[in-house]
Image (cartoon, rainbow, N blue to C red; front, side, top):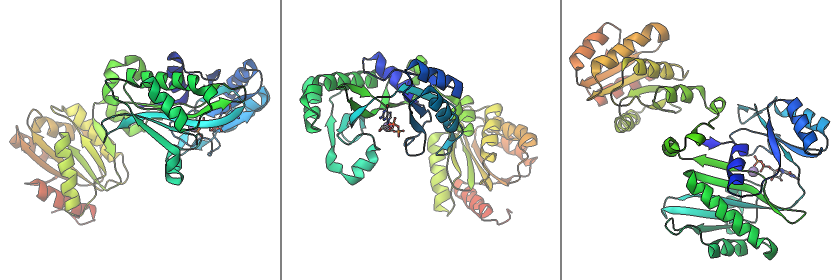
Length: 381
Ligand code: GDP
Ligand code: MN
């Protein structure tokens, strides 16, 4: 789960990382009022869950409350990488001496967190990595020892940060590590961490990604989720406890079990087709869940055929069949279905589905072949 800039910076501030004064605005009038509180000069920043807002016109430096209102009106009217802007952060404007990058993530190969710093802050770190990989310093952190002071100092030296800022830098790096650990983040990034004209270090931008699998133990953070920012399909999927990932093929897949779903996608590809999604309806899926899953799949316009692959264990084939049937009147599919049902209550399931006009398959290979043929426009036998 991605956090907004203002949310990330709030978490940073709780650990003692200095951030600019500022507040969130939902309207241009609020933006104006906040700019007024801040003394007139301000930065109006779109709050959307993508990077590169600056380049896209989503960040404006203004000199007066009136200008803040104008900038806010404009920014609230644009989309950034397809996302409409609904919220703004209005921060005090600061004079910048230099911009550095400081981030923490997990290094899967090294199997530990890694602290990353660069003197080339302010631009996307991926871009620096491409252009000047030598300008990025990486420091693995032993999770049992945590970030040691000498490591942060080493990093400060490696990015040639002037010595007068080392104390603050060490303080900020340690705080970033603490918040990263505390909330089970997979990314905590300050870009840019600026040296201000009046010689302070300040986290001007913030980005955090929290491990979804850890949200159960961070209810306060789970509540920060911005439902407006999720694709509608993902929101629906979460509501029903479905694991759903949209892909760009044409064969909609409904499968129970993540492993079987992966195998189904592989066999589709083996037969020359492309899955339109990954969907695991989970074990013991009841009719309601199955119906919701079907709605999701058929809501994607690229889907030209649906492949239902159910291995009934705890999940009962007749329950799944009932779910499919109950969804039919509502979704009124215009595409054919290929169904492979095996396992618990398969006979009953098949009997139920025989009432609907579906193509049944005997094996996964058979099902995939039929689905691929249908996706290519061939009529199903
Ligand atoms: P991003 O483009 O989405 O990463 O947004 P950032 O918050 O990182 O802002 C992009 C750039 O805008 C920063 O690197 C700064 O150069 C500039 N910027 C942001 N806030 C201020 C500010 O208060 N004063 C000045 N002078 N520039 C700012
Ligand atoms: Mn940034």
